Length: 96
Image 1: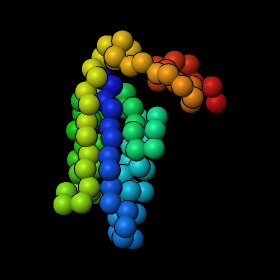
Image 2 (image 1 turned 90 degrees about the vertical axis):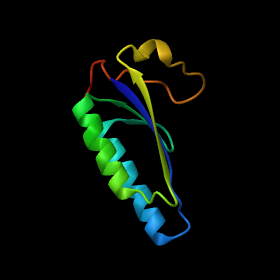
Image 3 (image 1 turned 135 degrees about the vertical axis):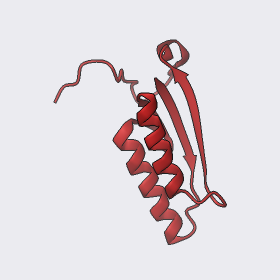
Image 4 (image 1 turned 180 degrees about the vertical axis):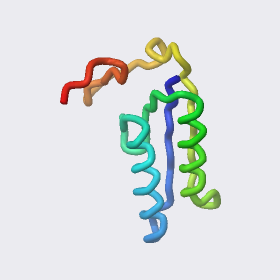
C-alpha cells in the first residue's frame, strides 16, 4: 500500500533539529522524499505499523505533528504531479 507521510517538527531548539533529522532518516529508510517534509512509502501493513511506532516514539507530541495519508494499493490513480522534480515509480526498475 502507498502511504504519504508528512511532518512538521519544531526546529527552534537543538532537540527539535535532532528530532527532525531522526524522523527524516526513518522515512528515508521506508520511502522516497517527494518534498521537504513529505515522503511516499510503498509498504505493507506490518512495515507501516513499525514505521509509525518509530516515528511516534521520536516526535514530541506537544511540539511536532505527523500526518499519514493511506493511498492504498491503487495509488497510481490518486497521485498527480505537475512541475519540477520528475516523479518516480517505486515499483519500476531500479538502475544501480
